[in-house]
Image (cartoon, rainbow, N blue to C red; front, side, top):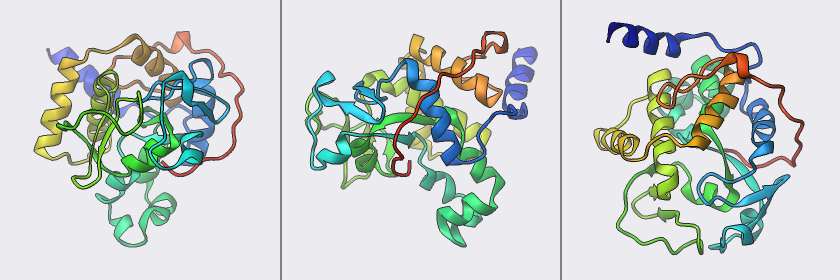
Length: 241
């Protein structure tokens, strides 16, 4: 048990890999390369090419914003707003000030373990809402089983994304000393138990770990000996995460 505890602590304190991105913009460029071999959006599982989403591949129906629904955006599973609002820098100038002057915020904002490809409309609708359980049935986005409750400011991801989302939240909270409400922590710990680590998560953890220099311990370790050069990928710019 002691060995496991020491290993767990070491995983969270390992220095970042030399190639780890130093800004959100740099992280997005690397994210395009990481996902080039598996271009599928996180929540709705739509295929995409470049930054264009094939909505018919997943039966997605835009709620209001067709143009934004047709493009990929890089979403922070733990929103930058949530990270920033726990930092003094946000109170003194918002996200731009934090990105310029707060080292911990910059590291969290650029952490590839927290970035996923998302349909732009879903990214915008989810906003900075917490992820949690809702009683509503999925109906807002056609066959995509994502639910956003705008009044309650809660988004419920599809079952296939709940375990991965939970493990990202728990990782970010540990690594960057983020506060989680007792309800959120119970929810994410329950999802972590209920939805085991998938093959996709292991693949993603390996690819991201090769860039960041550490894996997400809630998913597992990564093997630096299995790291391969990233494929070239390019896409038009997209909105904030």
